[in-house]
Image (cartoon, rainbow, N blue to C red; front, side):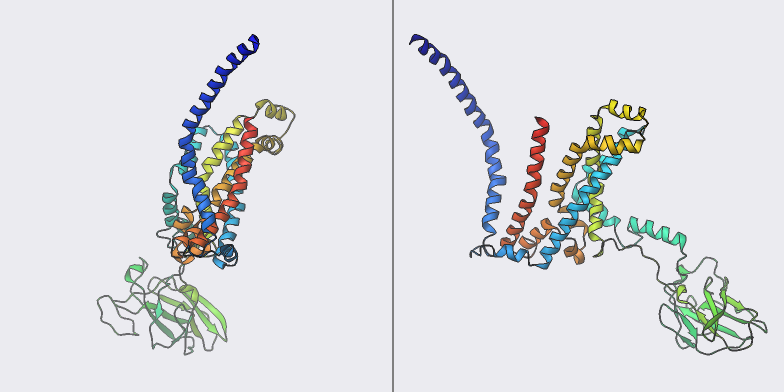
Length: 443
């Protein structure tokens, strides 16, 4: 009996100490639990309940919002775009991060290289969106990407000489704006033709342009001049070459007979041209449309077809550093003796990468991929800022569609709450997968 009392007396203080520890733990955890309940649990429960009511929130509609969600074309487009994001962005980022992590181990300035790639993570999505909205501008004078595209294009294909030029009226030419222009009356060898144009700004004239002059054709040729039928300060006679008017150099001119091009010439600095060695007969003079083609403006990055890939490109710029650093940390933990043993056995770097590095990095790659999947499901800022208003619907994802329906003019928080519940249901499985993997790795 005495031994039993002593045992109880020894146990009771330990139990009281454990109870005090539990109470103290509850005191410390309670603020976090209250914040979690107020900021996470309550909004989730409220959204689930609100999704069962109509736009006003007064009438219970059950699952009507959910059925409408899957019948609304705009919402289906947002679901399609979210699917593209989930399939494309995490896979690309994980692959790019893996390649960069491996390459940085082989460069001398690896730390500086990683710093440069990681810097976009310090930029907010708002700032990144503004940067890429400007970079994707259609005007090559403002958008850096189209400036590069146009520069490459013009390096391989000469731009049109005079895209704004148009023929002066009532001078015997057929053809509309943009060409081609052809003389109405046929002419025989030994004759000359004068062709006047307007619509060319004096600032757009080539530096070497000289005063317009007609070249003598000779007995077996055709001659003429293509000129700007406008004299600075006014004056002169329309349809006639005046001393103050300049020729249009670099124009392609064709002599056409029976529908076929018999000869081709290019206008000189004074706008004159000459076809020599022509057979007897009647010819018309034609200026091809290539002289007046509109300049190449580059790619419409923010058009309906490319707006989603363009926004994904901006997302890759921001998050590549994140993927590279995480995968690089996993790469640093790989035992080097396995790699060296493979090299001593004659394995190539490609074989080592495919059969040793990637399998050993599989847990890290999975964590990075799933984390990015969770992130892209919630992407909002970049889509909202980069996509212009006319194509906003083409770029919408679930997060932006939810905001538009609820607050951006739709004023239907019942449908918006249903979209938020759908987004939650899509994110939760990936989150559970990540938490379980972290627990396994921690164990």
